[in-house]
Image (tube, rainbow, N blue to C red):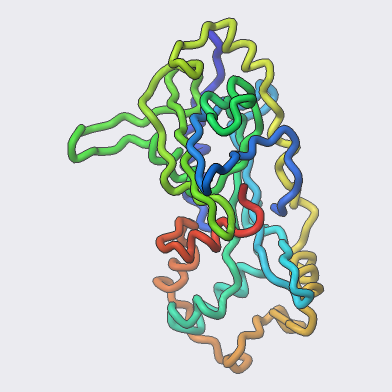
Length: 300
């Protein structure tokens, strides 16, 4: 039996899902779903981390914005590392100064969170050559929320108490039925879901042997190379990059005070915690427009 220390998986998932907020770059050996008639339905199995790493996923965060050159650019969000981020700071000031609905029209895009895990492709009718192979898989906050839900104990009105499971476990995990529809802003996987708890199996639902699981385990890709290192980036670095591509726009003055349209310097409203909480909510879109924004540009 292939064993891995899963003791802190629940905490890792809960911690990353509880944060309320990486620049896109090429991921080698990435699985990219093929759309047929604008949609796809693929059976995947999320896999544990390679032996040399501690977590079954890595996370990147970035803010996307359109520059004065008409192109879309990204800057890293430093809040992932627990540091202050100028884009988040400016957005907070906007939500302090304006009612929620007006602030939404002024604020910059919230940080987009993307994750990378190892997956086994079990069934993929649109591209059967990928079946039975291990890839790196990039996904967004919607899939991460589904992981959190599946791993958390909960009460179901019909089934009663449901014990959370570790979806990354070879023997007691569950398959991810990845269902996505193509939009102008990328795939929208809101209809994806996890199946029932069962050992990892082949496309015919035949459980894999320990030897077959070992072969998969030996193929796991390291995830750390997919994580953008922001440890050497500063608040000033991110702001400088943003203002470089937004020529003529200044977010802060020389004293690091936010420059907000329609608000005189020193005349910001008092912090409104209930409004600020709206800014810090998990990026789970509620409308189709918000879904489009969330999956714009970098999310595969």
